[in-house]
Image (cartoon, rainbow, N blue to C red; front, side):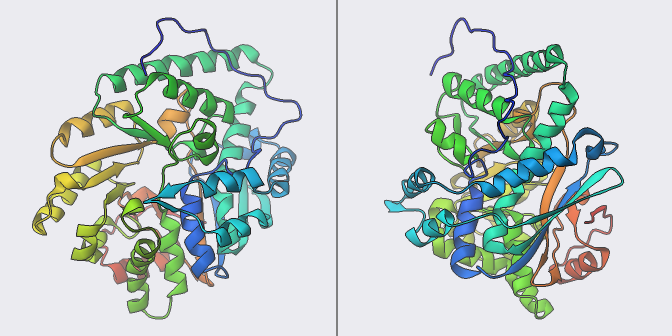
Amino acid sequence: MAGHETKEKESAPAYPDNGHIIESLLDTDFYKFTMGQIIFEKYPNVPVTYSFKNRTANVFLAHHIQEAAFRSELHHVRSLRFTQEDCSYLRGIVLSGKPLFSERYLDFLRSLQLPAYEINVTNDNFEIKVKGNWAEAIYWETVILSVLNELYYRSLTENLRSKTDAAWEEGVRRLERKISLVKARPEIAFSDFGTRRRFSLAWQDALIRRLCAEVPQSQFIGTSNVYFARKYSLAPIGTMAHEMFMVMSGVMHHTDETIYASHNRVLQDWWDYYGFDLSIALTDTYGSDFFFRDLLREQARNWKGLRQDSGDPVAFGEKAIRFYNNLGIDPREKLVVFSDGLDIETIYRLAEHFSGRIKLAFGWGTNLTNDLGFRALSLVVKVVESCGHGTVKLSDNLAKAIGTPEDIAQFKSIFGFTSSLFETCRY
């Protein structure tokens, strides 16, 4: 759709006096449902613990966010239910001529209340834990992050309407530049992946509305946010997250050999449920070097492609091309989805570097939904325990490693991860 010659000036909406940040349980990432269905069907009673971590240096969230306000938002979320309309929308998602989600799973969603949470304040930061069955607890992650982000940025502009408007205007200016640059390269295809780190619900709404109006559908291909996918008739985008592999290590935590095998078990489960349509594999839970050793030749041939979420994207893309070439697979038939720390300059660089060599798509997160002139927070909610065992993510970025030092050492040994320079994200 062509852009408009003139545009009305957009201003920041006022925060509602009595409204809440999350008003629909669809306001989350699509992969919570694709993962959630497998978990409900195969692993419903697996006990897990999720934990929150603020990785942003020198930002103390409890200085900015009142605990009572935070609790009020999460208490409201626990009062929400998946509505008949929500489930009707999910029922209408069809891949290869079949409904993606089973009626049994949709019935489960209709009866779901998110499990209880624990909040404490230590050293002026929040400690948040969710314990429960995996099938129920999985839906908290993005919600907690969206709430904390919005409360934090509200605090920075509270009682300063002019500052809020100035931030909104700066965000619009930066978005217009992104739109212009994206449209100048028609081969660039991207999705909105920024729900968990957004500036606010209202900003994400305005941003998606603008992208729909001004960027061709061949380029802006969808959003990970299911609520906005429904609202704007976009494709909901997403497959799997690290937690699938992390939790499975606890489910199969019998010997080093079974822990090793847990990685490919996830890929096998995924293919059994979704086949080619959703066959984009996340590659870095235990390091991409291990992933390429573990992926079977048949899987490499059958799966649509890969998602890169840490490390050097150029190095990863080159590694993927070599991997396919060594198996006699034409990499031009495969897709790499880059989704780690993207900005428009990085997207341009990757598009140019890999042009004609492998298919590309971009999952554009924080820099798309939280680029209004403020420092972006680095907040995560990760599963830290499965079936009573500590979970680990090794990653291709040393700063993203998760787990206790003891568990990391064990998993490095099991998965043949040789780097010794680790900054662990401990909970």
